[in-house]
Length: 399
Image (cartoon, rainbow, N blue to C red; front, top):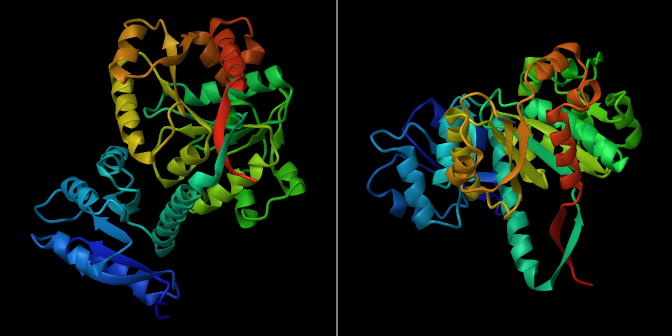
């Protein structure tokens, strides 16, 4: 189907290969009319001139760029064309490369190999974000600022094994105990999530059951899918099937989370440690990101890189809160040195819980329930009390 006059102009940059053929087939051979591929450019000394002539709104940049580094190209084009959204195509879902291209200026990334649906959904999400930013800027003079209570918290650890899932589980319980409100724990770690194991939940329901109804969630449907845990929180588990998890699109995830926000007072999302489009969607939608790190150099290195990368995501000051887990572990880096290295104040320091943390996980009984007087439990309880006192600044249209 031919593109319309309202189609968004797209340029593809990269070596002539199967990836470019797939882009051409997706944008020219499918029934979509949202995008119009106006040029396919092999990187050369005239790249800037050719892009200026093509006048695109989106640039797709393949990691296969010949002798030139994709990072150098993105960095240069960001300076030359700050108003054009760039999407990087990277090999697989390598978190290091994903961080690098985002830090260089890419608005989003997609792992290769990809499907037509993956490519189109990523492009549509970028367009949606650009429109929302433009709309917000246009309305700025007519906006009034208001504060509201914190609603959604994403728990994320750039390095696996730092205890982000343990903190998410127990923090959700702490929030419910503190507020006595409706609290939902969401398994946002779509691959290899362990919430069911950690909470001893036996059910076949998961977030995948909401995908067909993502744009029209209702209370009865959500009530049928979530699990009512004995602690008082509701739990929406991650998918059990790897292939189903692969099929979850960022737009579906966005629709589900915004729908759930209307039904719950507080939502805690276990975002895991992987960094892909769905993770970025979770982090975007969260009011606060609890960045979990541990006092070892590898974890601090990854946390520092993520903090640097996040600057390109235009997050408001204060959105990211650093949680130092396993304080006091043998051979650990000092707290003062950690704050200095990350250039971020530590929001909370959680003592090393030792063997009791492992015992609680193995028995499927959360630490706050099994060992409420443990130093780790007390620290997480205090974390919950601090979080409920936070407020979120938002703009609403003036009357």
